Length: 173
Ligand SMILES: Cc1cc2nc3c(=O)[nH]c(=O)nc-3n(C[C@H](O)[C@H](O)[C@H](O)COP(=O)(O)O)c2cc1C
Image 1 (tube, rainbow, N blue to C red):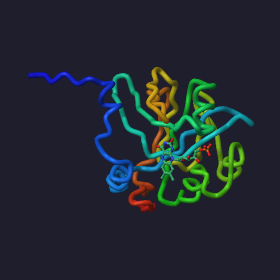
Image 2: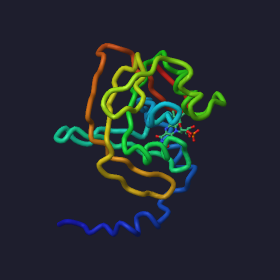
Image 3: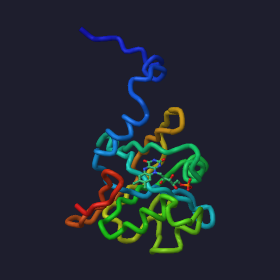
């Protein structure tokens, strides 16, 4: 028998405390990527782990972005974004695009070599994988927006060590 799940009450009912939730989610090992959007002086980017594949047909993925970030604004303005999957040696990029080095906005692009593919969103040379996306749908969820991106171009380099985040620390895998 199918159980009816009332969506609104799921959002409204506090199932767990914020601290319990954070502690549990810290144990989730996740690949680290930089989401970029915009061109020229309007380029913006942020470090994310809330990213996953959605479907192969059509090629699509999901990324969850905090509405308070500059990257969120740039993604909405341009209707596109690029996922740059980081390699083990990219810790400093991860910290920079997470706002941990004090760099903001366009300053975050001063390190590294940046090009573009189809949408014009910045592509990091040396990323393990790159997925250039157009937004085809999004869901408003409190502090965050869940973006669904249709992948217009993708490229990858096999056999590289990936950057993974778990329990507040980076690891190479
Ligand atoms: C490992 C790691 C993972 C993160 N994952 C996300 C994420 O999935 N979504 C998000 O909105 N912010 C995430 N953040 C936080 C953003 O990277 C951070 O708030 C960033 O500075 C936002 O850019 P802004 O300075 O332009 O606001 C993460 C940070 C770190 C260090």
